[in-house]
Image (cartoon, helix red, strand yellow):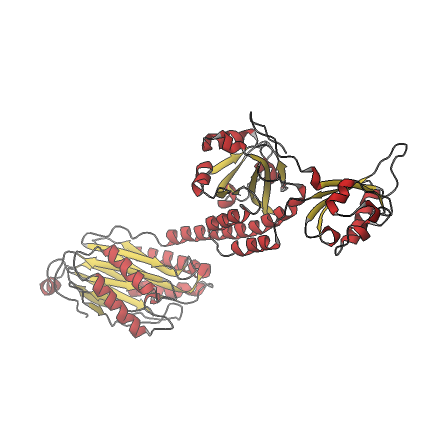
Length: 570
């Protein structure tokens, strides 16, 4: 397919006639003519070839004799046959050989199987190592941009002088059901590009990475993606030429490219994008014989890009899900400051941890932290149901123990995660005279109940971290009839820490060592009363996450203003 030519665009370089020869064979495959051009190209004089079967004197490589017989069958049916061959008498060089029915004056056909054979030395093809490198470099990452960049680097300069990698924009969004329609363009995102001059800035100026362009219906990019077939062309279409010249600011630089190839990227029967290649006048133009290798590269690239695209989509979906299920910590009631942090472990983006803060009447707040058993989407599904139920129950102002009993009955209906741990704390400004007299103005009370969950930690003003030994209860899902409640008193400046077991437990560290490390990290992070709570929360999770084998959740709730007293349990 040829696009519209711009004024001054040079014609592509013509093949060297020394690389081209033609000879004839009869229906039996015997060579009937052998001109000097064939002798020069193959190094075999006419007296050694004429009258001999072509498979015995020329196509002597493995399988080439059978190839010649098949070509004669095709010619006898009036069809042309083209193949790229190497080896045997042809040596290490690669040749494109075309068989066409031979017509002669006075005869409808020169005879069944008689053929004109055109032999053309192909421009040096990518070596096996070239394609092997393509497989190795393209399979080491699931990052979409890095995958595309590796593909572009493989293609340039080994195969082309310029390369661009595009993915259909609708394949990066939820609208994968969108199809190309006749008369409409297609939006494609430029993922990576490379020019033979090796200066990345030049590529970025031409086509910035991440930019979305529209391939109009008359462009090769559209045609390749529409038909799923490669498109060879020797002039830029008008849209691309004007666009490239405007971006580059140098029409002569664009004019140097005189041979182009658009290759569709097809994965699992679906066109997900395209590769665009270009060569300058310094390189041979793309030929039909090179399409096999270009198709192989595109096939490998399509698999890599589709895998990265699917991972990118699933990760984006999971992150949106996790953000929706774990909303930001809401504004705390007056006198209470709250910060939270969630970190997924390994390749998991979403898991069973959840955290929630529910504002209640009279300045109170319910803080709920839970962990549904398992990882990935199954645990996330259970977590979503438990979190929603806990939020509704807390909003009804149920006491913590009653809230856990209700969740325990509910989890029996959740098949994806039959067990979960949970802790619920309801904080309230102190109103009784004895608490105020003991702990001072600004003190709070906190009612806590837990279901098999790790114990909370209280960090005193000044940084001392105290582990609260409260009744543990059984995990949700084991039919616990009664969960116990404990009321603690918190002075102004104290911080309550609720967390999941991923923060303190793994195979290389005992739970006691993990709890000790948590207390030390909390003490260090909250040693001064003016430490921002959000910064302290992130510092603690980062420090303990390096040991983690499970998702990590940490919620900190601090009483304002500061006071030197400490908590007591009753």
